[in-house]
Length: 207
Image (cartoon, rainbow, N blue to C red):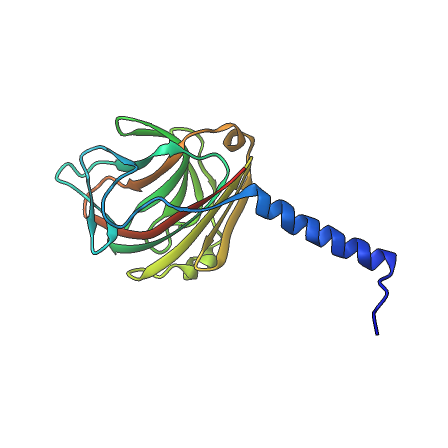
């Protein structure tokens, strides 16, 4: 026996279907930013070490022990970025978005990657307002120091949300971020003794 849908239920079904269609049409599909073989598509800023080992991207402090960045050659406005990182040694690093770099001076916003208790997943504005938002302390347990971690960063307009191993770390709406433009960049902090591995760096642009 065929079920006759009442108008309100039919409307709900149509709205859900429309939302799925719009979401699919606005997303361009995932693109790998790191090919597992070399640094094609990236540019090195500074004297710190960036190299490929075992199909992983490695950043390591050099003899100068200064800030260093590996930035994409392409700019990205609205996107979902997913990647994995494993901290060795100190592990103080970060993922910048809508960033520009001159020498080793970077402007833009950083999703923090740091040792336990140092606000991984928070958002920091370099050469500007500093910390915009930090995760609540109870979320720090999501970080697995010395093991592989999955980070997800969604940036759309003036809104930013970060996740770490499936835990939502922060969500932030900020007009200045909404006005920003630039690329993705990985950071190695100054001070020396830092080594972080990265893999499966994939971005889905939202048009």
